[in-house]
Amino acid sequence: MDPKFNPETAKFYYFRYMKEYRAICVLWGLLSIIWCILNLVAFIQPQWIGDTPESSGYGHIGAYSYCYPDQSRAIYVCSGTFIDFNTILNDSFKATTFFAGVSALLMLITVAALLLFFCFKKTAVFIFCGILQLISAVFMFLACVIFPSGWDHKEVRGVCGSAADEYRLGECGIRWAYILAILGIFDAAVLAILAFFLASKRAKIEIYSTTGTVTKSELNGYSGDTLSKHSVPIKPIVTVPEMQPDIDRYSDFSSRTGPRQGNGNFQL
Figure 1 (cartoon, rainbow, N blue to C red):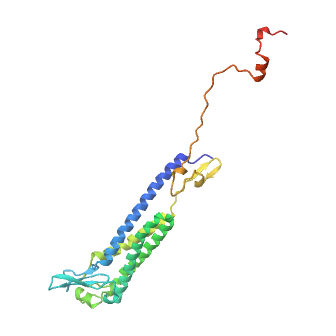
Figure 2 (figure 1 turned 180 degrees about the vertical axis):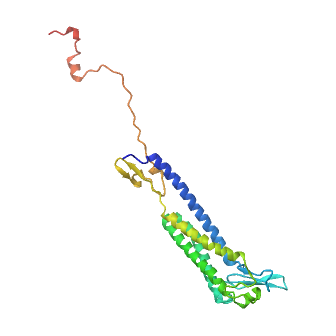
Figure 3 (figure 1 turned 30 degrees about the vertical axis):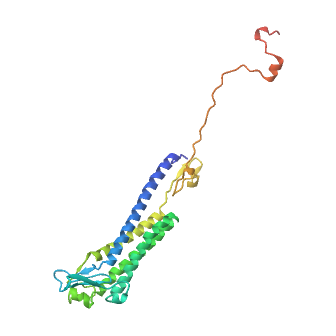
């Protein structure tokens, strides 16, 4: 059987694969950190819905807080906090706060879990982070779906008009934080799928020789994760001794018996 790859070709493809693999890993880590920040911003900001030029009132509402203008000070005053659920308007907004808050917390844990790459196997860390990101996407999806069911509250109607009801926004409009939360669902889901993909992907180096298939462990210590200096194959060097000039040497027997006589003195 002809060899499919020689060791030099295998080493070239191995390093090229690992370069691309690590680049995708770094990209996944950066996107996870970015989405963690955006998730926190979407959760904290009270800009999920708000007034429009056609609205009967003024203000904007978030997952757990609602803001209204203070005429005496000409600023917006916000009420409600995720620490005390009794300050949240209704049960729908409480559920939204819970799911969106847990989603943000899971993304924080995911970012902190990036440090585990220095301590544990990459496959296990990718799977762990992928599970957290998948749960985060599900929880943010639930938060975005449950949030409109609380639009029938009187505080919401005071801003959006009497036409506001469950899943009916009335005269208000969708703000950027709610849109960011919706986009975050797809972002977290894509990051989770990418994490599972990176966990399952392995460098498959197949080298065939005349004796059959050579495994990775037989390839002079090459592995799918690291390549240390100790595993680099050592090429044998064959040295040829220098040719010595011919020297007329006698054996031990000839040295005892004396030199041979020339052929001209041979007598029968």
